[in-house]
Amino acid sequence: IQVDRTMDAYLGLGLLHGLFAPIPGKLRDHLNVASKFGYQALKTSIQAGEYRIRVEITTRKLARFNDAGVLAPGFEFRKTNFQALMRSLLEGESAFDAESLRLASASIQVYTPRGQMRTLPEGSSALDFAFDIHEELGLRALRARINGHTRLLKARLMDGDQVAIEAVEAGAPPTALPKWLEWAVTPKARNAIRRYLRSRVKEGA
Image (cartoon, helix red, strand yellow):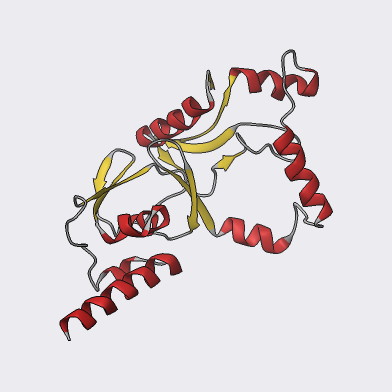
């Protein structure tokens, strides 16, 4: 799939995952940071009925580069990608480092409605996503919309999900409850919930 802008690619990915079930662990984001071979695209796999379909989404400009390399007409070499690659080499990082691969396999990539990517541990809930965005959003969260569907905060996220959080209005008291500790898996979320619950206990003492 070829689109005009980078943002359109992320929006298209969210729409695609809303229409078809994404296959966990198959999403690869090489759109903003190229693969080690210079390829730039979003790659995902979806379940369409009995068929598994691999989909690649990129811009028309990057598609020319993916086909022709640095000799593609009008291609602008991205200095930031080159600098990141050089830093990686100088620091002795390896694309095949076993620990890096282990960590990568244990994480998922999810997206905000505007296409911003967030990386979370596998098994994270919508509540973890809320706290990853901002602690105040997490503490005031009410429910989530995952791929356009209303879900509870305890709903587990899948690789490639698009997530939005609905929260109480500013100025309203936080909605955090002790049972949230059963829903959250990330240290950031759990620590924030504990701090809030402890503060409530002290206020009531």
